[in-house]
Each structure stands twice: as structure tokens, then as C-alpha cells.
Image (cartoon, rainbow, N blue to C red; front, side, top):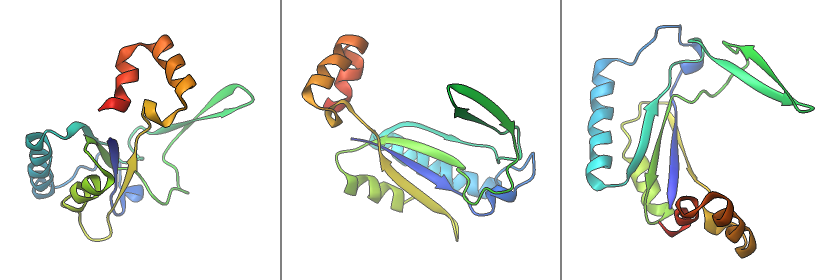
Length: 141
């Protein structure tokens, strides 16, 4: 099963352009990320700059898109980074999330990612036919 662990850092919504995390925090997070890698569960990870740094939103209405440049004052929770892990169970994903070196008032949301097995058998066949074995195998991992 693949899970995304989404970090919501404290006060990120008000961080100024050019803000970067302090080295000590990066060091702790780096060690955690190394553990994920050594355990063989890490598929991807990245940190995101604060919304005040070149952010934009693309909204859709009536088949048309509209770009709005940030920052966005109404934002209450801002994603600061993510990990994509592949583990055997929800419990294992939650165990990894619990080990994140988070600071006070930070939150990590853990969400399972769709895989092919979430769809009915007929749709699974159509997915495999249209997108090939790589997509179809996601449910087998």
C-alpha cells in the first residue's frame, strides 16, 4: 500500500518569501528520511516553499482555468512537504508518521493513495488496457 504523509508546519501560512528551515530541524528530518530509505519504504519526498514564495492557484469553472497568484491570506493550513511511502498496512504508515521529528503545533496527515485494486474488475481491465502493466501493477505492490 502506498501512503502520502503530508506535513502542515506551524505558522507556514505567514512565512515570508525566502524563509528556509533552520539547519538543526533539517538535520533531524534528514536522519528520519535516511531511516525511511534504509527501511526500503520511501518512494518520494520533498519540501515545499511557503505560499508567499511564487505560489499560484489554478481554479476551474465551466471548462476553463484561471490562475490566481499568491500569497493567499485566507489560508489556514499550508502543506510544507510530503513523503510517499510504500508499506504493508495503515498501522505501519502511522508508525512511520509518528516517528517524524515534528515540532509543537505541527501536524502530519496520512492518506492512502489510490491503487488499481480500488476499482471494480471491469475498470481494472480497462485501466490495464489503456495504461499498461505499470499502472495495473500498482495494486499488487
